[in-house]
Amino acid sequence: MLPYIDRLAPFGLWYRQLWAESLGKSGKGTKPIRAMGTVDQHSQLQLYLDGPRDKMFTFLMLDTQGTGGRIDAELAGSIGLDYLSGRRMGDLMDAEQRATANTLIDAHAGVQNG
Image (cartoon, rainbow, N blue to C red; front, side, top):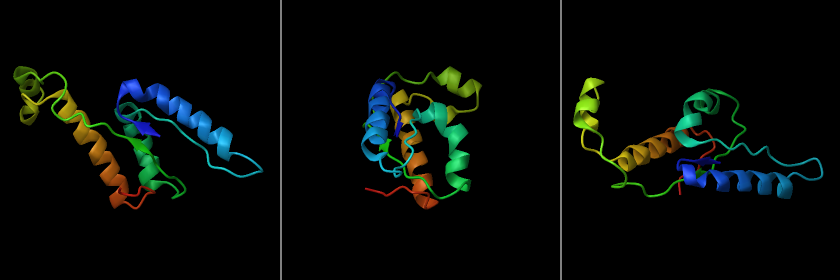
């Protein structure tokens, strides 16, 4: 479970509990792991891409394009990210979640597109 929106964090916790409780029986089941989008993707993505192919993923993605505050031009420029100037934070979040999902799909790492 990989929600990219903070307000979906409680749902991720509930889903993990439900999955483990419902499917972890009679010596069978998979281990549900809940991670939070951009917070955990960097630390866990290496394992997902180069580790054993024994995982599957569920992304919770909301349409965040065009939402949130705008990225300040001066701030973006000061760190060499001029291309983000004026973009909305929701656009950035949308790009991050889609890029992570597509990377896992392209690597055949247990993500089905659709």
